[in-house]
Length: 328
Length: 285
Image (tube, rainbow over all chains, first blue to last red; front, side, top):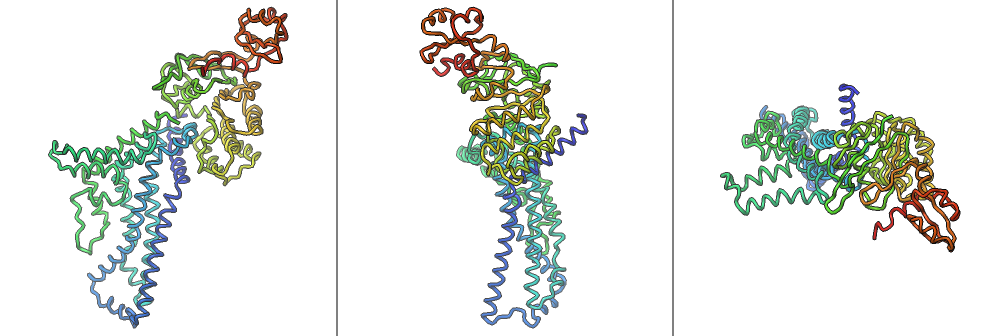
């Protein structure tokens, strides 16, 4: 095979390997966000119905005879933009729950990705195919940092839209013009912000993905225990002996920059919360919380990039273990 | 044609035991080699070394590749069935076919589907819903559709009932094997493969103790059924094994001449399993 067709075959292999991951983990990658989103919407609808019923029973008809509409039409531009942002938050809120689920899914996916097939010995089947170990590990990284978040974000956007629609329809029963409300929200910007956050998530999650995958490729049993016990144990030792004092750093530095990065970085948003001291989410409610100009400040922080370097090194280790771990 | 596998000075040491002890052998194309040995003799280690699944010392050339460095390229020309149930339990028949069809350049989808149509497997059936025999049928259908030069079978029929076992080897011989292909098979059910083997390799404690083609084996090893009155005479010729059946002694000779043995009693060709038992005497003692 010449170089070009070899390259094509490698790309094709990675594509099919990722597809394989999706087949195997459809439950976590697809159904988990869909079901979570469904439950989120259901709870919202139930909440709205409860509020309506309680309201009607107590004789309060909020905004009847167009009262609420008057409130809105009396608002000035600033107030209206606040309403818009409140609606955006409603859209984001759906994502909030999905993000937690995504964190758990990615965490446990990575822990099992290079371990489960060694345990059930199906690794012997996968290794009997002309696919390199690098492609295999790479496909798992792509599944964790691209495939899973993209599905979660798409589901999140759909759920957010439905959420917005439900709110608008509910309010329209109270005399508020649906279209006026929807025009105040910025669904496309919300979408754009969420999608734009994915690469940032992938970069931020790199050290945790690398750590979890190397544990998954290395552990002979109980990868979860190793993955958690090693950093936490080291953290305890560091705390106990005050080792960080040697570098003039507080103990908490180790917990924050090593333990947490190795384990919790797969949870989206931890980057924006802990990664960059430059980010101050201002109390100004006129600011979009997930505005990319804000979130991508993180890309300027060394914390992110050191993590990426560590992640790549850990992945190289995971590939090595995948190649040579011989226990099937 | 050059050898499919050339191994010289192959060694592999685990913490507590030696799995391969300076093993050298050569396997030519178009052969069906039985690699037979007791549990823990190093069969699986040898196969893993050939497949690039484990590290080892010494020289090993498989189809022109070094399995340590070029495992993924090598797998384009080598197929491997380990003992049953190594297909992932979540995969469906159609997913397995799709996947192999797209990552394996030498896979013939039509052939695979033809093999599958002869079984009861359904496209949407998952491996976890299959019996052991069906899993092996699926694996065999996948493997036989690959135009590979070397097929390695490690206990392929373990745990299968006799119908599946017979069918397995029959399919291999009728629809797969030809002079350009080479098969290496390890199994404990020696009787079932003995008639299809062209070469025999016995491995014991990490060493090859017998490496010969079946014709040579037939000439070298002779079994004689001797009446009790001539048993001492036979013993004097240093048989490698002796056992009693119906008051007669059966002696197994290695390299004795046919002419000397013929007067002693009825001569026959020993079965591979008798040969194996004789060769491996005292292994577990």
